[in-house]
Length: 173
Image 1: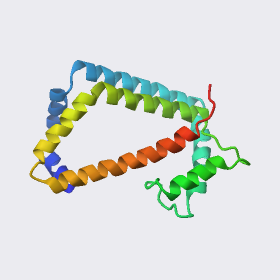
Image 2: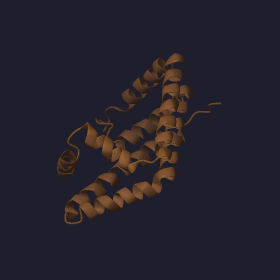
Image 3: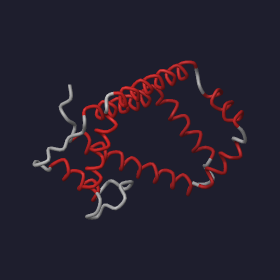
Image 4: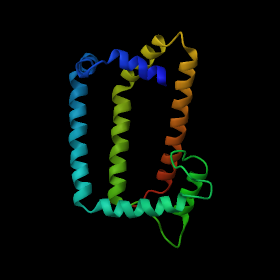
């Protein structure tokens, strides 16, 4: 990972080099999508705050993380395994009827929709970027293997979190 950072630092020496790279690789549709996404995020953030969802979500997360911590889960950044099991137990506690607050669920659903849209709309560009990086690092197969392992580990964690979320969504209108 350090090599990748060093290569990026050599290529991007100032803000202008970053701006040039972005403008060289973006088209008008991408810029419009980014602006629309930013505008939607601002509106959702305002609604989240204005509706009192910050306090409600904070209480929910405090309870969830309290229940997850310990019993083999000491770092939720490694969610799969014991943290996942503890989270599932939290949601299954019938006496508490724990559910994700609807206002928080709305934000999560919007983020998921945005990620799916990005993947669907820009999959070809992502594939081209991956091909480019593979070519650039072809002489360093250990770096490619390390990146692939990191990608697989992140995907596994995302899948675990998504599974717990999907299994425990509330009935929000």
